[in-house]
Length: 118
Image 1 (cartoon, rainbow, N blue to C red):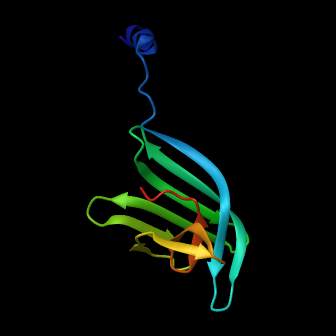
Image 2: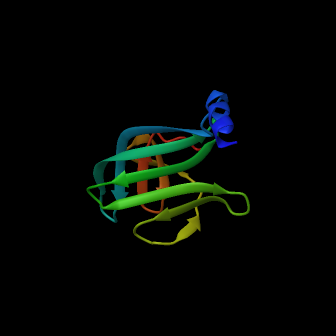
């Protein structure tokens, strides 16, 4: 029976991935009481085949910070960061750095440039 099933399984098409991953670098800042501290962050978005955001991970080497976000049906958009070390609901907020727009608060006190809000 196994000899018959193996060739049959090889002929069947494999299902396509349920999601795609996109990685890019962008400006990010930690907001202090007196200034903004700069770094270049790596952002990894995972999207469903229909384009909806599944997860987002943001990494800053300079600040040793990781921010992970995902959508939960009951709680909505959830964020976890390596500073607080627990997950919490967080809605992105519009921000600017030295008068330059296009930044979003992805967690309290941390701004990332040109990330989508979906």
